[in-house]
Length: 472
Ligand code: PLP
Image 1 (tube, rainbow, N blue to C red):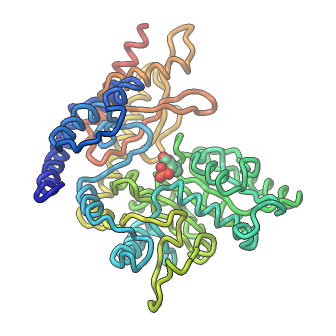
Image 2 (cartoon, rainbow, N blue to C red):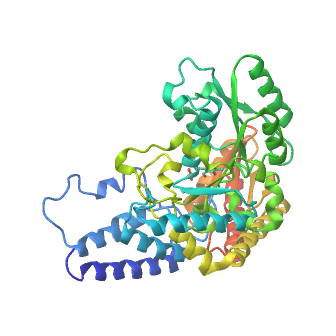
Image 3 (tube, protein in one colour):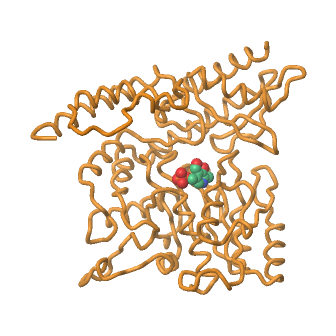
């Protein structure tokens, strides 16, 4: 790009973005494309000669956008949200324009210092006690990997990185059966191994880990000469919001000398509302906590906050300082690349600063409270509709339901058909899960720009499509 092209195309992109966001309700949430449709529209080899931006931009609009799933659509009720508040888009534009590598304090002092302050703003916002510090990781998966590596190193007296795991006592890590697959992956990648991931069944209203069974498993492992290292606890599991009793888990961990990492990737955002903090009572005693402002809060992906009680353990596990990365002559600085697996880092704190200032905590609390209330109302309306069954009650804004099959029809097949038909319809987007082995439809309300009318629209679509299937 030459001369004023960058300015002009940036303006064009901003105008496109504003129109796109305003017009989202007119688009199907999920595209109606088949595998391979989009790739077939793209040249199979790179161009030898430069192409005009007009043509590139037109191709973006005509070939790419129709094949996108619209994650900012107000009627996206699938998975969990990946909210990108408009103000965080603006901050990200500035970040990508400066395109700084923020791995060391000296490679971007403002980015490092703003990150430290934003972590403390969020600590206060979530009601965590003083003493937690933290880091912004790219994703919860990375934060959980960092925590699992820390558990492993701590249990192995900091010898795992140096000596490897061969010849060591097997390290054991415990979680419920409701944790996200990022926990499985962290356990594989850390070399601990899936066979040493001890999955404890869940019990009770919130499908929390059975703490007595957890204690028995730890004691049995110790007696067998294995090395219990840590527990990954869960607040707001991905499937149906499974939530452990964090007080009980941390008390047990304290008695047994284990490290506790709490995965609150989605539900953590709700803790800005004091009335929801009972879901993670006891969290102040955890060693590490992850929550994703890039899910429900509105900070554009990627932005995953890992709070730690003792940053020394994390840094001891991950820091590496060749001469070319040393900063000489400056005391008291933080180099956040020593707190994470990747070296290079984006400037992620800016979008948090913009978001928190532009909306204020009260604005964000109102959004979250609305989502929780609208979701509960929808569950209530579905429960009263003949043929519908609420399978798991709302945990914050997430619940699951099932629709009764036609005589002789398999219930799982019927509910999968319901999800597919709803998504092909395009007005809303939902996903399914399995609860106790049986298919259930998940619903979560969490879109930054959703209104009560959007949730009402979800009720209409669900009931209408189910009625259609019921006749078949
Ligand atoms: N933990 C939970 C509870 C999740 O729901 C998810 C993703 O949805 C993750 C972890 C992984 O998050 P990320 O995509 O930031 O790695």
